[in-house]
Length: 182
Image (cartoon, rainbow, N blue to C red; front, side):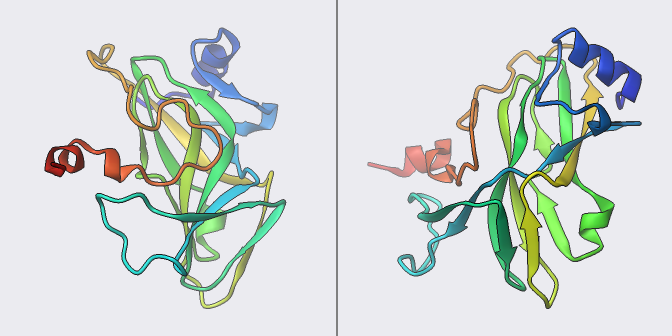
């Protein structure tokens, strides 16, 4: 079941769901708007020749109020909001229609597990033939919350738990990569 604005407001007010900071106009009829942070990561393509799933990925870091994404380019960003989900609630990260209509694709694997807490790292791709200039503090995406039929037996406690700022890939820490190492 997707949660309504009334339910979201109640859960945030009583601390059952944490979205911090929360702005009064961020709560939409069936979602919560999130705002772009000022911390960004770009894959360091000058030092890397290939991205290997078992090796650490190198990034260039930017702390900026504005950032421009060149055409057909990718970068990681973060939300300003820190969220903490109870063990019976999950969320989908969805791009805003107005942002998608300028050719900016927003993703974060699309899913936030029950029990997750942290800022959301967003994968941004400029599918346009023109650069797109972004400004920290602008609404960038929305979280759609879904109530589970019961609490998760094993809520999220993974490698991104508690993340602050933009967090690069930690795929090298996956079980498969660890088992392959001597």
